[in-house]
Image 1 (tube, rainbow, N blue to C red):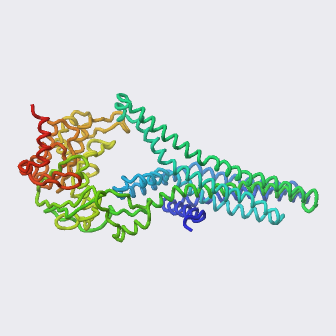
Image 2 (cartoon, rainbow, N blue to C red):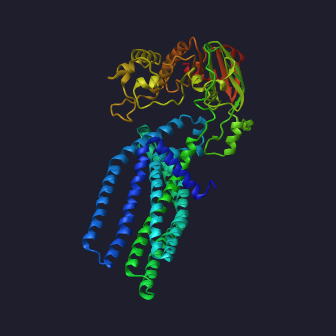
Image 3 (cartoon, rainbow, N blue to C red):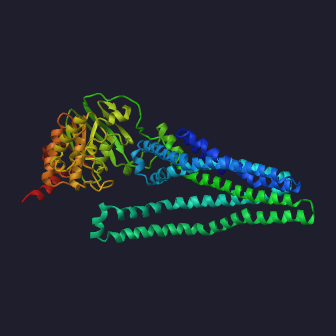
Length: 623
């Protein structure tokens, strides 16, 4: 039932009307009124007026009476046109902007709720892109289509009644366009949607290459290497794959389109002409005026039926996209951002991992199997074992304001551990305790406010330096300014920002302003560190904050991180072991486990893998 043609059409119309009504009621009312008026005008002119004039001509009614009727119709059309122009040139453009803004706000709010795992699931991400990239186009189109369906359906019924009144057998010819539109055209549209859905992966690949070629951040590599050949190959493969997909559907689509045209136009028009001609010329059971009315009404009704079917098919096609939007808006995250719970108490006395294991998996979201969602909600989702885990049986307890360094090779699970601590993911096994309480019992937003973070792959936004540091956390202007400059000093970016004409008001990137400043990778990394320094939180996490810095700048930054970390719990991740030697505790991680744990001196005395790696790195700094 839920996969049926009618059910999907109804659901799409209902969704569009509900959202449109919620956003702008006047738009929905005037949209429907516009199309109802349009087809009232069509019925009067194409059906009633012609029949009336022919009847009056046969009865030799006076020309004056005839003109009164005609001019009444002309006056009505003028009023309808005024209404239509007002709607099309003012109401619709203004409300389209409102619909665009409102549906995108809804999608933005939901996107901020999506679990982090979902962004790492390509299947979810493909369908997510369909949901968010098309919604602002498909929603007004579907809203218009729903109103058209109502108006055109009523108009068809009225026209069919007129035909039936003249000749009950003539209405049988409407079967042909019904078959053409609701069988062949429906199948054709369904195939076109499947074709577009198959192509979306390849379209994304082509779009990626197109975007890469045009972005300045890739320009140096493109000009100094042969990577353009690789990108071109990737682009050509994507285009070739799209051609193959289109090729698989082309013959069938061509046949279906021919059947649609043949049944909708040829059989109806030629058949109706032959039938009416026989009734007038051979059997003499129909007068010429009736033949003219039937022919005119049937031709007009055919186009109305075509337009009705086209509206239905448009709604169905848009509905297939809006179905993704509906599912996305109905998505229930595993970690709701608005989850209620306890407010963490300060100070933070302890952080503990109890037998924590975790592995990246498919997103259990709205686009995936409902049984999996139900299992997740009931807590019955089976945990994965063995090699599926990125982190395996992590156990430790940190008490007091200690500094903790996480060291080890890439892929050891260091960043993942911190993401679990910040509750960007939940463990598959075990639990994480803060002040002795499972972090899943805390209010999510309040809990995450405990953390000041500088992420390894943090992003610079197209806004001022001040906003990139404060990240929307504003209090009073003067206090905010002091906070920004204090953070920039700790990040060793004071002089660079001071030398800018607009200082902390300087726009970063040239996304929207040609006067924007593009900092180096190391300078951007300092801005990311300043972002953490500006937040007075009891727990600080610095994930590879110095990977783009030279050794001297790195040394200064870590000195300032340690200074900032006094009086709070401090976690930092670094590949360069020289920067972790002053930490209170060092976790040396390997293959998802804490291989060694202790202070730097204790680990050196143990003479294990950490000590070997430290000595190996130290040789690079000895002359």
